[in-house]
Amino acid sequence: MKLSEVQIVLDAEVVSGIKWMDREVMTVCAADLMSDVLAFAKESTLLVTGLTNLQVVRTAEMSDVVGIVFVRGKYPGPELIELARRKDIPLFIVKHSLYETSGRLYQHDLKSCHKMGEIL
Amino acid sequence: MSGGQEIVLEFQLKASVFDVAGEASSKTKRVLQQIGVRADVIRRIAISAYEGEMNTIIHSCGGTMRVVIFQDRTEITFEDQGPGIADTNLAMQEGYSTAPDYVREMGFGAGMGLPNMARCTDKFVIESEVGVGTKIMMVVFH
Image (cartoon, rainbow over all chains, first blue to last red; front, side, top):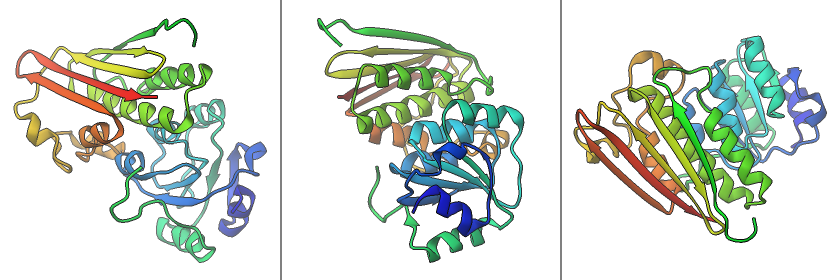
């Protein structure tokens, strides 16, 4: 699924990175634990999170995450948006909870980045 | 990279300075991209570097991150000035953490850092002495 479809499925606001909407998403990682993201995210993973600190963008950068979705309408600060822009990481904001956001993506055939017993 | 010349990057990491946490790993990643190392290899180096950088900033009194990029491998060494880890075997266990709450609120301190660093790297050595400091040496082959 492309990021542009993610935007429609989640009825999301694109905060930055509109030029990257053609990027392909293969799996999803829904987590507030950045350590788990670092351990389990694969290439072409979309990160769904309720955290809005700078380390979310750093974690996304290191893990080659293709985009970040902030749930429950949480708006990140200007520093985070600027860092994401510099790192070419698109940012979305959705009104839904973490659970519903994940559910909507799952319904559209996007599966978890975490498979039992498989890391990296 | 030509001529077998290695690239050396060295960073000072200050304790509890979180707004620039990740800069050293980000620069390392950029250099590796510039010299054309494979993306999946860069990812393993970047993740282990970042976990180490965060660990140093969260737990230590300050330290250094030294990256040496050879043609066939990248070596990363973290060295700090304490407080040291009493039981490194325990620290290597998934889920074991001594991180304070404010670190957990940032999404870290879940006791996944050291095991994840070991998993991402081809060689991983940790030495620590309470009251002296901790040294971590990692190697990832390209």
